[in-house]
Length: 238
Image (cartoon, rainbow, N blue to C red):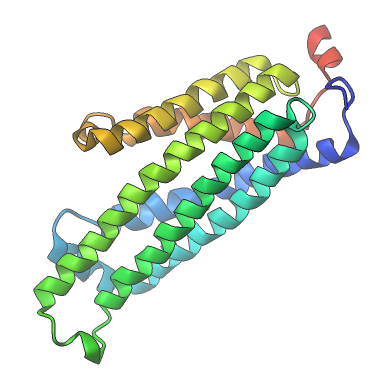
């Protein structure tokens, strides 16, 4: 199929892309910033007390992350359907990278249950001192942060390729696609930097690499949900 011929399935998929971008943002922000930002601290004992005292909130965070992963699968499939006519090989590569991201985030979400088990007070854990259980629970939450960086690295790779295809296709404004390329590459590069140089996370805060990709996904989501995609001829005349 030529790029200048848009199939009805592409238009439908693009609307799905826009809606899933918008639907995935609130639970992602709630889980990572509202829940974990409130409950997790550098002190193992304080973190344990917070999780035990607000177990329902912690479980809501887990559920929110799982809902984000569910929406991500829909998003990735819709992105592939929309952009496959532009370059099937690159669209497939981007889809696979994003699927690795989703699988990784599901894994670290399941790992959060480990912290709950360690702090559950069940009989078979009574052989361990409470302080040791608190440290192990905090260690499990540290694995969440490390795994999240791995997921963001693959998300950055996949999103960069998808945005390059957006730019080539002309389905959305090219300025928006360029912003997506920059924001996605920045997110992936920062995640990789944190893996190699973890101390860099103290300097490069989430505002620097999170705000650009948030802005892109919010803007692109609104654009595609409300206006859909346009043919290259329309984009050229505009």
